[in-house]
Length: 79
Image (cartoon, rainbow, N blue to C red; front, side, top):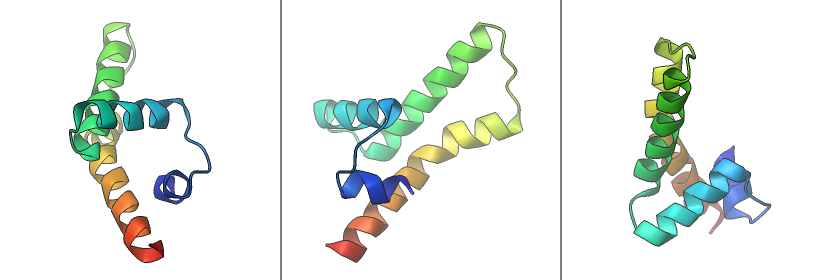
């Protein structure tokens, strides 16, 4: 889903905007940038007393590659 609105410039949310900005600034792969953001957020939440379960960890570590794959597929399909 993210690939559709990001590639077509429909506007990024706060986390997506930060992801895009950091990727352009660092030139790291988008999967690495997004995974780093999510893992940082989970770590801060856990430090503040939040619950971290298997689903949280799967999402935090898996969303980066999923976003990268979505962007790649949308870009190749519509460009």
